[in-house]
Image (cartoon, rainbow, N blue to C red):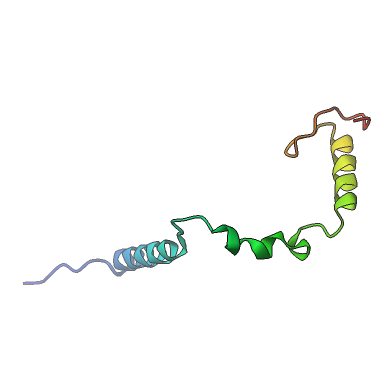
Amino acid sequence: MMRHLAKPSAALGVTAFLLLLGALAGCATFDPPKSWEKGELAKPEMQFAADRLEARMNQHVYTSKEGASGGDAIGGGGCGCN
């Protein structure tokens, strides 16, 4: 009597799914970081732009050229006069 074994591709797919699920479960966090754990992110060298004034001017030029603004709470049109 021959036994019917599962196809190797099906077993490989289930194994890959379980490994992926285990890897994602290891990345999950259940509580937000505490205030003392955020100190490194508040340092100036951790900011995206080194110069805040230059970053604001670049954003102003970008919104003026695009004709719209959004995402940074600035109202106005595309004329560059705001």
